[in-house]
Every structure is written in C-alpha cells, then in structure tokens.
Length: 162
Image (cartoon, rainbow, N blue to C red):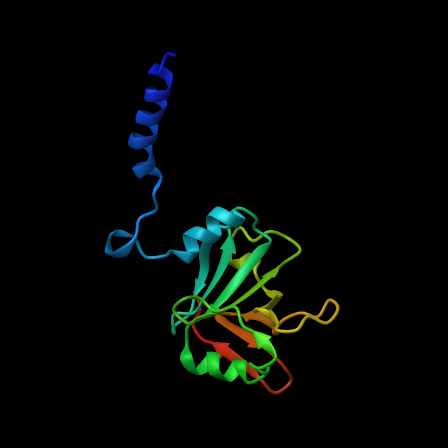
C-alpha cells in the first residue's frame, strides 16, 4: 500500500492547521464594530455635518439615501432617551455609548446642502408587536443647526453643524 498521499495530506494538515486558528489572548486585535458592520452590510459612513459637540450626520457612500445621526453629547443622549422607556426598547448604541439613529431619504445625499429632513430610528422594541418601530426621531436642518424631535416635548438642537 502506497502511503505517500496519506503522509502528504497529514503534513499539509500539520502545517496549515495553525494558520487557521483564531488569535486569542493579548495577541488579538480589539473588536472593530464599524469594520464589521461595513463588511456585513456594505455600509461606508462619511460625515457630512459635524456639530460643535462632536455629534455627526453621516451618509452611507455606498447607498446615499441612507443616513445616520450619531449623538455624542451625553446630555442630549440622556434627554432624547427620556422620550422612550429603556425597559421597552433596545437602543442602537455604539461600543462607546453613542446613540445612533438611522434612516433613509427619498433622494441621495451627495452634498451637505442636499440634506434638510429625515425620519430615523434607533434600535427596536424588546418585544416585537406587529411592525412596531424602535425609538423614532425627526431630524431637520435649519441653517447650521440640526434638531432631533422625539416627541412634542422632547427634542434637542445641535448647534453649528458644518
């Protein structure tokens, strides 16, 4: 019986197996959710407005009708989250705690001036009932200010967005 093919296969396994092992411990890189999301969804977010407090309005350069507003201001985040019960909704939070509202517009955004208004959601209900959405806001731009309106009484205006 000729053992050469079996020996070659065994040698290949011994050499190739370590290359397939996942890194562990301190040698592994930190988990990059933005890179993972881009790989999974094909989204590539580019800021079109950056506000004084660091919050940003981004457009997906692969689908310019998709946008997201990233709330980085802790006071704004807390205030907007009062409009919806955290016991009822899972919020779309980044690893660093930013609240992310995502939505679509009818026509693509190619220049900052193309954006005036959108409706966006963050997260989803903890218990899905029909087609119920997650926390919803209306995002409007007036001059250099962008306002997120969560309800008649809960809104926040982000100043000097350029």
